[in-house]
Structures are given as C-alpha cells and as structure tokens.
Length: 227
Image (cartoon, rainbow, N blue to C red; front, side):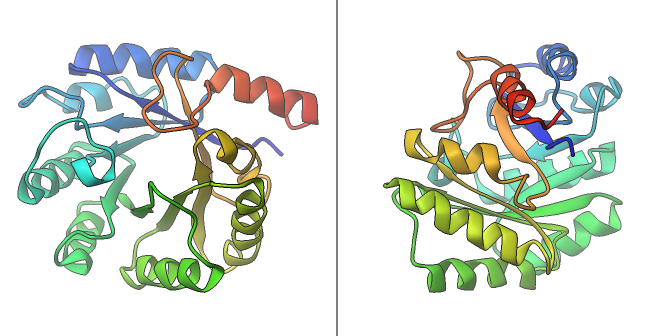
C-alpha cells in the first residue's frame, strides 16, 4: 500500500504553480492542489493543466475557510467551473456554497470529479455532529467528501480515524484534524481508508495549520513500511 498525498500549491502565477507541481511530483506527491485564492486574477489556469505532471485539484477558498483574499462566491464558483472545463481532475467546492447540488451538477457535466469540503477551524465536533456534516456533503452528489476539523486534544485524532475507517466503506472520504495536535490523523488517514491526505511542498509553505512537508510525510510512511 502506498498512501496517497496531495500537495497544496500556493502560487501567484500559473508559471510558478506549474514549477511547483513538477517539484511536488519529484518529492513524492500523487496529486497537486492549486489554491486559486493565491493566484493573481486572470491567470491562465489552462497553462497549469498542460504540465500534465499529476492529477490536479482546483480549490478556491473563501476567507471564512482559510482563503488569503476577499472574493465573492460567484467569482469562486465561476473560476472553479472554468477549471473543470480546462481539465482539472478534481474541483473542491465548499459545503456552504449556495445551490451546492446545482454547482456539483455543472462540474460533473464538465467532466471533473468533485470534492465537497467542510472545515472547522475551532474544534472537532461530537461524533453525531460530524456524521451529520458528512451526510450533508454526501447529499450533494460529490465524488469525495472532505471533513477537516481542528484537533484540540490527541483523542480527537482517534475519533477522526475511527470515522474515516467506518465511513470510507460507504463512499470516498478525506478526513483529518488540523493543527499541531492533528498531525497524527493527517498522517494515518489514508492508511485508515481516506482517498488521500494533504501536505505542503516544503516546511515554509504550509497553507493550513499542521501541514507538514511531503518529503517528511514520505519518510514517515517509508519508516512505517508503506512505500
């Protein structure tokens, strides 16, 4: 078993993003997440797709969900649909998006796989609440559900991994905890059934609390016997 890792790519231009995608592949990544909220407006994302280094995920975060610039929901939705039409393999849509099911339908018609994501930057909710959120994600019809919380104690990792092991049997799932205390679930989640986990390109360019570098994560997997 080789656990899959997606590397989050913060870049201002399409050329910079393409270079970083190629670096991510060399370091052992399986997918690259392009953070559109870092890109300058009007950047030609088709150029990134043409690198064909590995499967690409288009993500455009709102400020509420960790985005780095102000953006209207319509801008984010239009950019994600354009990314799907340009050939991105996955498109990540925030669960709070208005008319979510219709947006997922448009993306599916454009030929991409979809991720519906929920982020909690303050805590890890109760097991009952986590399952309710997961069901809302799945009701959208997305290919994958992404449920990411903030670990406030080590036990939160155990709960998230247990949910991952159970729920991944019923459908595609990404699930782990953010923050220093969530690193365990970040590492172990694909071993417990998650489609993949997320890492940074290096130690300086994390885009979420608790992200570790892809090279470090690959070393950990190798030491555990997962090459």
